[in-house]
Amino acid sequence: MAKGYWIAHVDVSDAEAYKRYVAANAAPLAMYGGRFIVRGGPYDCVEGKTRTRNVVIEFPSLEAAAACYQSPEYQAVKALRLQAAEADFVIIGGYDGPQPGEAA
Image 1: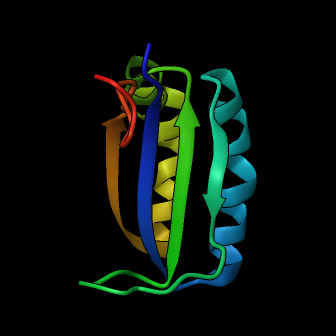
Image 2: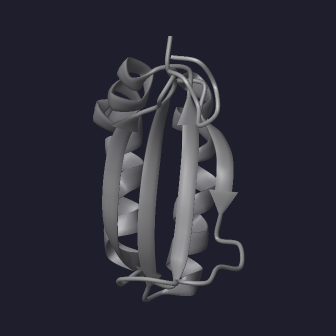
């Protein structure tokens, strides 16, 4: 089964309030098996537009990723993020098929 992901591009407007969001999101993410793959590291935007912070969180499945986002626990935490940052946020299913150079 393919994994699910949250992909977020974030501009933080209130660093102290955003720290509260980061601390609070640990519980709902853990409940649904969320695991950080990218968490605000250095980047080079080589095409298009982005925001100042990029985050990718992996879940065991697309269903788990969606359930976490829609859960009452995360929605309460999301309210903290909305006070501290503006974001583009995508929930997407992973790819579990052939890779370049592999037989189909």
